[in-house]
Image 1 (cartoon, helix red, strand yellow):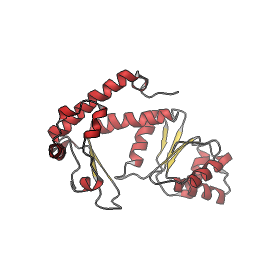
Image 2: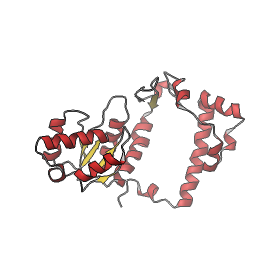
Image 3: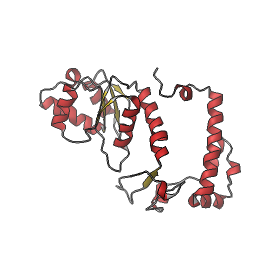
Image 4: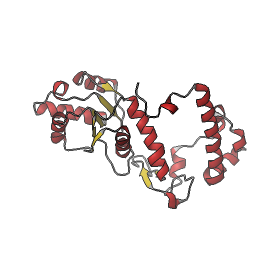
Length: 236
């Protein structure tokens, strides 16, 4: 099995739990002391940081719903000064006011990179892979986080984004791409487009791993994709 951070990923369970408990306490204290929203939420229930000592105590923490985050627009729940924001992301706003998310440089280049690097290692993606990145960029997290993961894994990035399907099916064939990142419906669209152009996805493409997201996928859609790409390791 491939690891991105072997020390962290193979840590004994007792050490892992101790680390989790330590960081839970740190996070709760920071939220209470620096974010008025959380301080008010805790105070309403009589909860103090000292009451949260481990992961089991999280059951006592009041929940936050999407409507609560929308009410905080335009700035998200920040644990740092607005001037420290390196980058924004946001939800689509399909069901209401978009929720903005602020990242510091550490959030982006250390924490998120580590998370995505571990995922790509788990999927066995590395220097020998060419990744077709078909998610959108902009404010949505999908594309940017996948590009960060590709870089962390040492793989080659093909940042196509969505669209240009007739060219995409040829790129997938001609460049021997091994990883496909996109929505499940777009994957099916690419398969149909390939067949229209006389390209056989099961033999002409070299895709071994996919990660589908951004929308729900039924069992039927999954089976259709698996039938067309029999060598595929379907991650999502």
